[in-house]
Image 1 (spheres, rainbow, N blue to C red):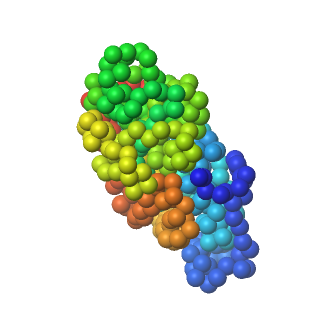
Image 2: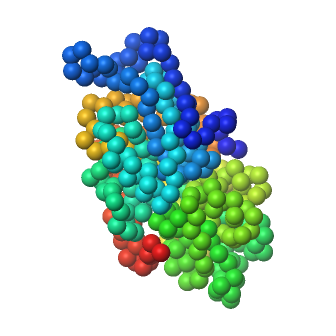
Image 3: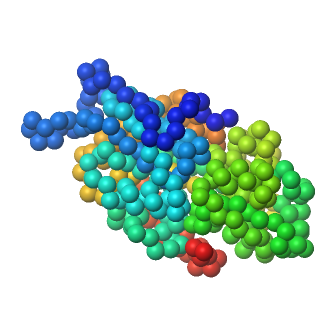
Amino acid sequence: MKPNLGPLRGRERLGSGPAALIAPAVAALMIAAAPGAMAWPDKTITIVVPTAAGGGNDAMARTIAQKLGPLLGQAVIIDNRAGANGAIASEFVARAAPDGYTLMFGYIATHAMNPALQKLRYDPVADFAPVGLVGYSPTLMVASGTVPVKDVKDLVAQLKATPDKYTYASAGNGTAPHYAAELFKLSAGVVMLGAPYKGSAPAVTDTIAGQTQFMFPSLYTALPHVKAGKLRAMAIAGPRRSALLPDVPTLKEAGVDGVEVQQWYGFFAPARTPRPLIDQLNKALNQVLADKEVVKRMEEHGADVETSTPEKFGELVQSELSKWKGVVQRARLTAD
């Protein structure tokens, strides 16, 4: 099931509290600017989410925002800016004022996979200040209930026999579901048509309906639909099985090696955001991620919470960018 976040969608208020009621420990998080200036934060904070409302990224961002607002003593709103595989949101945040009031809930696609695939109007490293890691979610291969295959071995055999029969859905070229599917094709030696969507939510919807037959969403996104019987879990595209789906093998166990795609998520601010602000945001984020309710919500949907310093998160981004550039060359992936 999805986190019980109520009907909130789009640019909605997710938490606030009068500054006068902030506890001294929380007030210590605020930054005094010049003498006589207002402390940070003194107005609404916006978290830009690069996917549509209703998807896994959106749910995670809202879970965190609900706790971050009261902690900082200000309203925290979500601004969903889906499109261009996260490039629209990324460019918007990269051009935003570096004042701590515009943040981005970025992930593997916006800061590693999509930039590795094509030239964009933002630099995933130079245009952002990493705030902190949120966690990871393995990629899960799922099938529509309309597909008459028993397991991955059966699927590979059918794909080789009828290469134009099946289509996989993705959240768009340059996203984790796209890379995972293309790596699967490369490793299994099969042909499968691809259907890129504008986000995971519509891709999952069409896969459930049978308009597309397969998909590689994050476990966080797929798990509620698997539990509801709307999607069939075929294999984990990662190094190990998931405790939430212990009977589902990894692709390597199923006979297809070389397909390991772990999605990661984290917060970014625009480049040149003052370091004291980044430090306070990191401290507040890590405090939220230590909340047992937040951890439980994340884990229920297959995401493992992991925190970091801004430096460690920045190192992860650069490492992942280099890794996926290599995959693009090896798999000969294109943005089209």
